[in-house]
Image 1: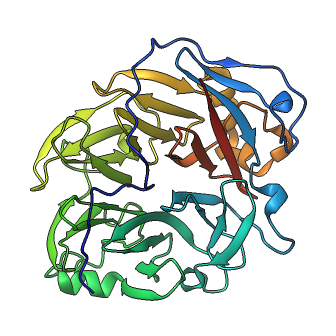
Image 2: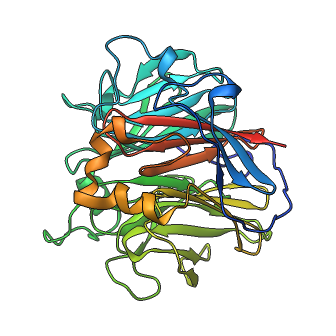
Length: 365
């Protein structure tokens, strides 16, 4: 099925918001009661500083999650459609995807295509093509496939290793190369990128007619190469569209021109997991317990939850804390795996922790 995009797309369909950059200061966290499921503003910690202050509502979704529905080993990805519905991928049951409305009310479970007994939900992005919206899913599983589906769950296409190898002319022919999808992103011309972040470390570019164009990257530490290209997005904040990649294990972001040429690299991250853009701001959830916000000049204007002592606790003993919710503290992040802006500049954060955790950061103006 051909892809026809009627406007520049994003993980969420948002109104563009330009926010002036504030000075970076030490994040603030208020003292609140223990690790409960807070709902009212009086119970929730405040994080951030300056122009980037947020009310932190952990477990925003839990009151609406029906009995028998669980995130299993992790909550993984988050996207928002044009109606404001929030889609969260997971490794639990049923399906591989839970949908909520903006108030946290559960709408439906879906994504059974990535649940062969145990859910392998990972990356998710949504794009409007013509008059219809489509979900692009990426499972964390070698035997599964990138999938494009309608919002009602009808599968449009599936691309597994064999399909991509054939369409690319043999990029994955070497049996030593793994295949384990992590994320997708979109081009302004209707094309898209499929990121094999846990597998071959290539990002596969397709045009609007689902024709293979090129493979970007491959394994390495030099510029233009990747070590776990875990997530990627379209960065057109300066008016020139570019592909920006969260090169996670290399602890950096990399930018590429629309023809696949490497442009620049930004170091200084810990374990960047994904990217979202709204107006002049770029949002980078970092698996190592913090969330970074950059301005149009790629200057850091906020690092939410950044605390060296807390991070050491979250990472020790091979991430043991991810399975111990009793140790999670309000206003602190354990392992942010994905994050997106909503239309009002609020942020939804999903974490790679056992039982899952979804946090809504409500912008305080």
